[in-house]
Length: 281
Ligand code: PXL
Image (cartoon, rainbow, N blue to C red; front, side):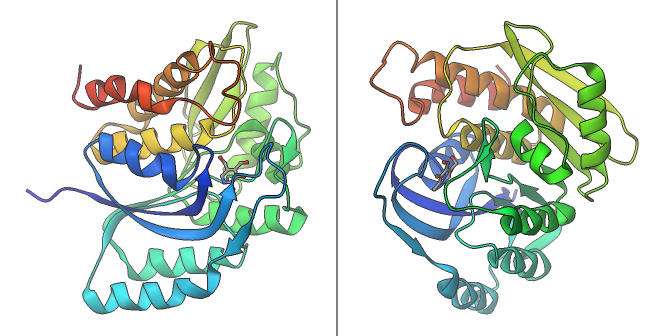
């Protein structure tokens, strides 16, 4: 039997529990081999640290792709996250064409904004480029801030109405991704959730869980990684999204009592739960 292989394109934030440093252990915990294509190297992530280093690795990407091509290396999924430079969208397209097996998935987490604002260093042209990458995706995983930026609809943090979410999904559906998993929906004060939306059929399925009173960088990466791992283990998109949502809730639960731990979530403590869920327990 051949197991699925994932390639993830995102940055290495050397410290800070996000991007590749969470994607590798999480997808591995799901039982799935993961290769990395680092988009940039930063000393830390950009959400709360000052004076971080940043090295854009765009120049290294074509040589890496060419070598893999020569070796006949192929993947069953390309999962993209934080890009070091918007020109990397073109390389994601090349990888999709040349390094993916038939039936492989392109999963795009448009990691560029949260809590109503763009991450440090990103601008409108980055949003436009990310929208183009999302257009190619089988599955895109925006949070509400990213969805608002890509659709031009106003961002609302909470107290959402069904109409607000429906309008957002209709506009997101026009981007071109086959499936949209929109995160950060809140119809009730103590609940937070996601909707899994199929663009063609307009079918939507919601999932809600307990809202935790803590906002941490890296939770989007934990979600996308657990989702990717579960999906590659053969779970449906909806089940994978529920596993990812529960996993993120557990990550935050394991962090909430430590007030000094503000830069990320203790995802390591929630890995046993993720392994169990991937194994069907
Ligand atoms: O977790 C998203 C993320 C990834 N990579 C870098 C970031 C952030 C969020 O701030 O700064 C470098």
